[in-house]
Image 1 (cartoon, helix red, strand yellow):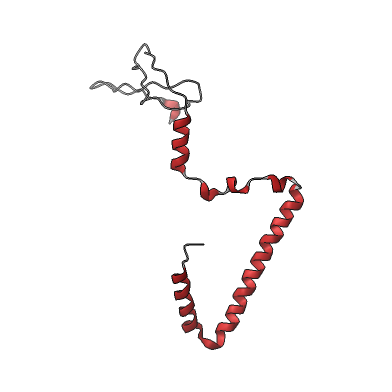
Image 2 (cartoon, rainbow, N blue to C red):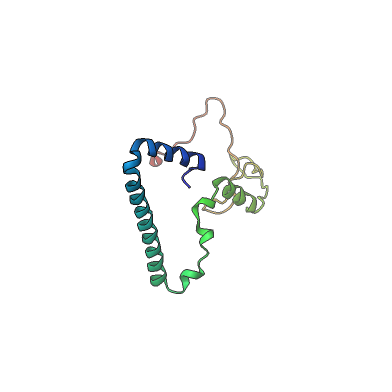
Length: 133
């Protein structure tokens, strides 16, 4: 939890004993216990309120699947790329080169795969869209 290990908690405890002193330490420990208790009650109250408002569907939700800590962007991208349908190689007429499986981008909004870009010749000006800037 928050990267706190037993060693770090022990160091924090020893520092608290030295900084607060034996007179004030029990009072601050009681305040900390009261804070933890109130936070736990707040969380339990929110959970009970959600259960009341959502009804029986609340228990049917698989909360583990919705945990944001389980998402790894690299895994999601890898799975999306591996699950993509195999691209077909078709020669395209005009200035575009034939599409290869390695150069095809996955899932364009307009439809099929995008062919690989053709490098510009020496001195050739790249296309410019004045409305895109």
